[in-house]
Length: 348
Image 1 (cartoon, one colour):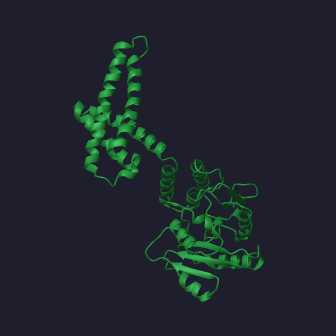
Image 2 (cartoon, helix red, strand yellow; image 1 turned 180 degrees about the horizontal axis):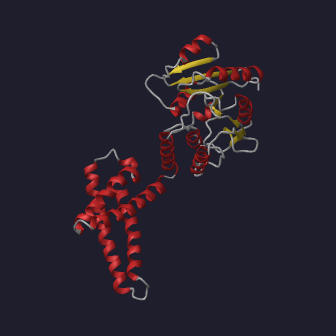
């Protein structure tokens, strides 16, 4: 692999203590296996001495980009990928958890027609250093399971990843949030042949972990965004139905303290707010007033239909056990489908 050009993308924020040893490890890889290796550090204005360190080292193959007005690991990775000019790109964490020695194997996988490569803890030969608590292990496993709708990769949450730059250039509608860009790239670059290279994942040696509740919440948001991208109709209808069920609970509570008409109005308003935010997420740029009145009109028609269907079952389907309940459930299902179709077609 003497001819391949490789750029290492290293997003950083307050990682100055870890950088010297990592740069030394990359220098060893450059010397032994990949002479055309270069490093792009994308720093989110750490103000921790990173700029002074890189200036002092003055290494020709190391470039530092300092972002003054933007922060975020995922967007930092994208900036680095955009700046790279090499055939191959490798993204890794700056905290010392990813072994630089695995980079040649990752490049070899890409040379042999992999669309994407991942430094993996969870394939044979991979491992995690002792010191992980149960909660961190459980967090990793749950996050991996949540990624199953998009990929069968065992370590989809790995931040150690590689791809050809031309593959990155095919990405459409990149919209990352949070700290895990790998899943976004696999989906948006339509990578099918993903090869996992076993690594030994070390526990962070210096600095503080970035794994916080905010980061976990951002990952959940990211998964929802990707589901909307890959399965928009399913997510839209499923969310609409879930909001409808919650609206039934709101209706029952409101009925305890308000007249029937007011309870119906409260439930409809509740449904409208959440449906506009989550079920029809791509339509919020339109007038909220016209959408609200259109939503109420459609759902009122659905409520009338629901009433007549339930009444018919009660009056005419005496041979069916619990006819009223069966009629109510049938009417509810029909009402949800009716409301969704007409709201989608005419309101949102």
